[in-house]
Image 1 (tube, protein in one colour):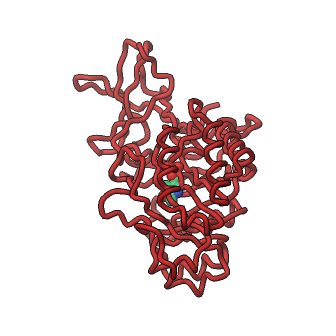
Image 2: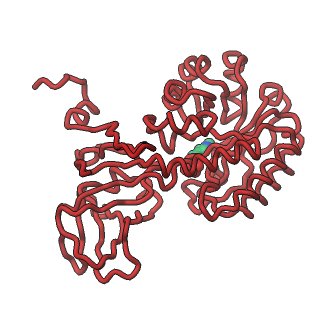
Image 3: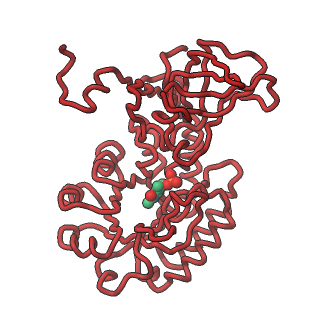
Length: 374
Ligand SMILES: *Cc1c(COP(=O)(O)O)cnc(C)c1O
């Protein structure tokens, strides 16, 4: 079937593959998983995800509200800094609230006393290839340094650490967890729950899942803790493609195919981390090499490379792989380019267009909605 491009295509069967691994960790290690909404909040697939996960975690009031309304189950609310109004609304919809600092924990102690409360710890250890995303970077504001003082301990029954980023290395995960267990052993014996954050790529085919499960189980038994994981990318990896159409082929030393999308507007995270998109069906040995570029006026609007044996021409589709995480949540109206529609291929094989955008959405985004008159 041919739908107007660009569109994100979420394949529930591929999503299910990740969800089943998450489920295995739940049942075999007893570690619960809450979806990190900052990575993926396309709620029309939550009906499926809910069956395999324990709830959501959030970085803001709106994310928590979405988790509460559309995912259900446990609502974990975390924010680098809450406002009074945030706390007022969160206190009636969240199960757990995780503070980033002792000052905020103390400021909102009274309003949140009916909730499970935690503090974010900064173990000054991390796994990240990028300084930008490294919670242990110099002057990091993410979590408290060192164990909490007694007056803070009295207010919490859990803690959260998020110190992995795109970590595919089980040995590294395991050794960091050992170090953290040593660093905080006194605290961990007192707590009821501990969230290990996201960034652990345990749904990948080559990840030693059995060992991961063993490690989590042993850790949770050692300290008698309910472990939580907060998968973002891990939950949705490889489930989504961004489908685009070639509009033009230009030449400047190399062949450049311009597609009806933009990395800046529709896969911004790649640009932020200076990565490129993988193009579906790109041959390793193809004779023809193309640069796949976006149609915004940004000079560096380049998705990546495409190799093929059949020449590309206007009207051909180009599919960008692994376009589910940190893409739809970061879409923007740069250059006034229409946002990609969102289409879900359901488990039944049925295609469900759940969202389309129009000029009116672009206009309403920065001014009062006037309906479709004028
Ligand atoms: C970003 C983030 C996550 C999710 O990270 P992924 O790398 O997408 O798995 C989980 N927890 C916290 C606190 C985060 O900031």
